[in-house]
Image (cartoon, rainbow, N blue to C red; front, side, top):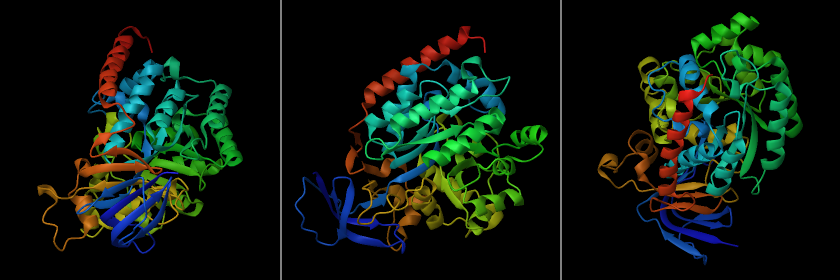
Length: 445
């Protein structure tokens, strides 16, 4: 049994009343046991957080750890060109080591910026090595191999046999789902309707129900993508997913920039979860998702940074600020206020992954996933008579995160990562991308 007592902090609980309290937080093993003032428990580690702020760890519901290595390699392109010209060839060139170090590079960045849980979509091959990185780093994750069994323009190494894709996904699920006492979970990850046969999608539907696991896919990110789907199937993305029984409470849809009225209705009625990725949507010129309309309909919306080559970082502070400000010119200054956005980054993410009873808020009995911020610097002052959540959403940065705790374990303390060898990962990331780019010089995709 291990224990941590954090003293004298401002604690943003995000409980049902969204209380902000001042006092102490006591952790035993992987759980928060008590929050209160002047706690006197004996603990293996006592941390003085005077003048600091504890928040629930951020939950990012759309990430591509396999793409972190491609940061800067695919700038200034729209989605379909970005995929065909850059991302798919790079993913096809991945090897076991490059997947591992790409994942570690992304995880280091995520932990440094206070993200404790991710929903990660990998690529077709070598997903086992991303799971190894997740296991070693201590981050909480729902992850899965990408599934792609359709598309003439897909590089050969990414073109899958339908049955083989399904079998490999099921094998990974059997090995990794609920490992480390549930910290690591599996999600089926068909890439998007354009690259998946109906046979594959229906198999995913059935396996998701059989194992009671999430399905994580892209939908309605780009206007040209929707035209492709309508031309082939005679209906829009979400309508099609609903027609084959995939639109349900286990489905996490990334982006949803171009929804019509019927699709919004389906998302609400079926309990589909939407992952809003404002940074990616802006950089790929995909558009601005109508998030206020989804929230007005009481749909479940959370946040994600997407991948490093379309953002170009995995920073939840950046996503929160963008999510808030890009809606205001159209919907007015009170739209997407700081609390709404912070809710999406914490308890909203927990609802998306079906873990709202375990993570997303700081309450006794819940998992100890949290970050400690030091908001004592020029860019977040003055602090007098200002709501702390507004300070975090509009002014704070990733550099304000001092300590990150996942599952009761300190993974970063005083900005020093404990589970990721920073120097080694940075060195191997450069070696890996150099090797992949060299491989691309002679590849014929």
